[in-house]
Length: 121
Length: 104
Image (tube, rainbow over all chains, first blue to last red; front, top):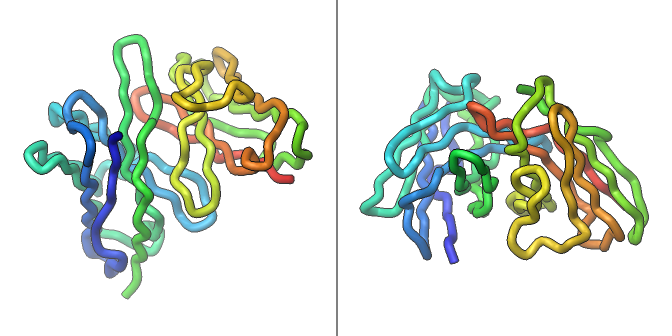
C-alpha cells in the first residue's frame, strides 16, 4: 500500500524559499503524476502543480513564476520549492498522487498527511 | 476554469440525503472528482470521472453530471459523512471548488 510522507521546515522567513520533500513508500514513483496541494488555515484546497515520473511538470498559473517541482526516482521522492514566500503562503502542504490517461482521470487517490508551513520572521 | 460549489453549508440530519452542486464556469470534460475532508485529515477521494466510486467508497455516494453542472449525492447520511466536500476538475490544470460543508 502506497504511502506518502511530507517533510521540511515548519517555519520559513518572508522572501525566502520554502522547500518540502515527499517520500513515496510501498510503491514505485513510476507511471504516476505527483502533486502538491496546499490549504491555507480555514480555507479550501489549492493545487500547486505536479510532476510526471518522466519529469514533465505542470504548475498552477497563479504560482508558476515561483514554483519548481522536481523528482528523484532513485530515492522515490519528489520535492517542492516555492520562492519569495510571504505570509499568504502559510498553509498546510500536501503531496498526492494521481493517475490519468488519454480518456480517464482517476483523481488524487493517495495523499500524505500534510505538513504545516508558517511564513514569519 | 472556476468551479463554484453550492451551497456553502448544508445542514441535514443523519438518514437524510445530501445533494451537493459543482458548477464550472465553462463546459468541461467529465474528468471531475469529488473529495471528502474531515478536520485534521487529508482529503479522501470519493468519486472520479464524474460518476465512478473510488476503491472502498460506499454505494450511498454517487456522482453525476455533464457540461457545466455536476452533483454529488449522499443518500442515507451516516454520522461519519458530516464533513467538507470538494469537487475538482482536470483540464489543462487541476482546479478545486471552494467546498461544501455538510453539517448536522
